[in-house]
Amino acid sequence: MIIVTGATGRLGRAVVDRLADRVPTGQLGVSVRDPEKAADLAARGVRVRRGDFGDPDSLAHAFEGATQVLIVSGPADPEPHHVAIDLAKTAGAERILYTSHQAANPDSLFLATRGHAATEQDLVNSGVPFTALRNGFYASTPVFLLRSALETGELILPEDGPFSWTAHRDLADAAVLALTEPGRLDGITPALTGPALLDYADIVAIASELVGRKIVRVTVPDEEWKRTALGRGMPEFLVDLTLGIFAAARRGEFAVVDPALPAILGRPATTLREVLVAELTV
Image 1 (spheres, one colour):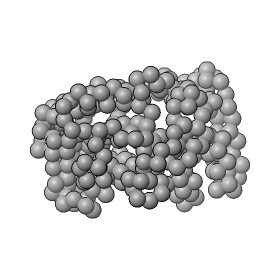
Image 2: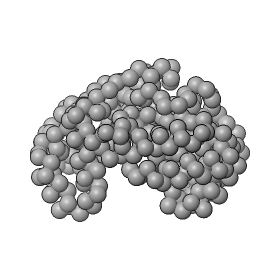
Image 3: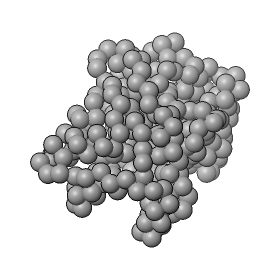
């Protein structure tokens, strides 16, 4: 049985929906924090069980009978992923897959990518065959920020750098291929990235063109952005985590475009423009 965690999230749900087209639903299971949100999957014959990274007993139950487990990464802290790996191994999983990050590195300026590097090492140490999918930075991130910028006409952020924004649909398709074609994506994958490097100035230019009105990219110092974000009620941990993204971007940690993803998919990777057209012009 293939078990997918986080199956009510954007990436996990996309993976399960695609798997259901290729694998009998009786061979699919999901681990979700709220089973009621996956009631439609249960109605289609997918096994739905509660599983919470913070509740090891629930994960053990959700992983029961697994041949493969896809751990869709959650918090920046690698400890819950370490627990999930151990429990997948205990459940008898013959292969563990994990959604890592293109910039996974213990020396990263971004806390989450340091965590991904730690989890990749946990996978190596587990002794179980594994795949760490080094996913590119999600293209949904600028979409979220642009929605408020469309109202104000300004996108106010710290200084950034180039990102190879990557569509969820492409990463979901890659995960499904990894799950259904064993041996094709073993170990730590190359960076699975979008096809172009774009910073936020490039993004607002595209968005302005698509919506027919000008959005201005405003750059502010990190500390000024932090004060404003805290004043709006953003938790300090999340503020510092976000600032780590911009610091890493300025150092060029996300400035990688790799041909691996289109080669795996057998088609061009989705561009950020295509994502913005779908998200902002409907």
